[in-house]
Image 1 (cartoon, rainbow, N blue to C red):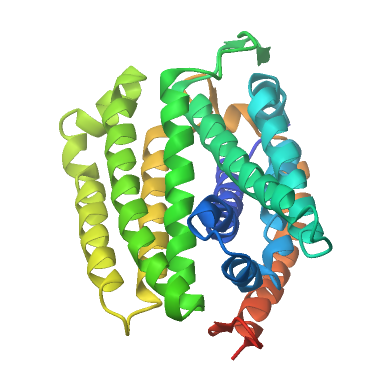
Image 2: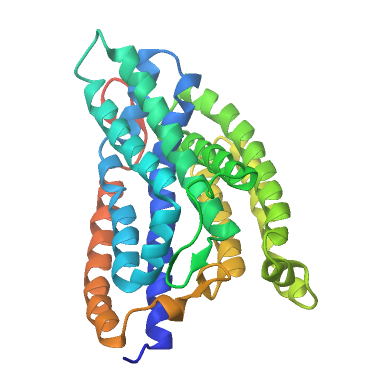
Length: 337
């Protein structure tokens, strides 16, 4: 049956959008767990929890949408990617479950409070690390044999995937620190400002390292980023990263600009996400399977696309409403104000 070029690419854009929104929303959420060891007192940790308590459990909606959309719109890609990434994906899901349980149970106990705090830290770090490893494994290429996965069990574990895994952990830590700049005051706010600097510098270092390694993974990556005249087209991306990073660090030091660091950190993630698109497009599995190769027939995609066009604005609306209702600073004693 006919496969529409524009519809298939529209679905690819929707899935990329869902993944990016998940990274944005759950990134600072996981980042708080990554920052937990820097706030040793119960009072401070309770405050960190309260900044996301009203919204955290809705963030995984976008992860479900991304995975379900991949299965529905690009089943061939789903059937190849999942066996290749079983280990990091299962680790991520178990970590998210364990982290969610820890989030709830730490409020219900005193005797086991320390254990659930460690579970929250471990679940957050493991989930972020697994997401970065999965991203790195996809970017470095998945071996395809016909219409199925042709590689081994440990192909996902390489120095490059470990690099991207740690990069995501540090990047989420930056999102968590800049989130706390918006939502807290006093001592926690001051510690978050210092952490924003440290994790910001770490994030830039890892962005540089991953960007330097990526062109050498595949010949097509090298041609897109360093070949002539393509280098002229993509040159604005690293320039924009440097500019946004400079603005972010400048705003971190300005106390009245408490929203800007978080928004600029999101801009940094958006540029990195755009760079990922530059490397991969038009492949859904780099250099092996294109978007068109993996797409379902036209009538299947148009049916699901209409549903997505109805549901996504609804999800965006109630998500935006929830964040609007719980905007502002969090008082350790009284909640939001």
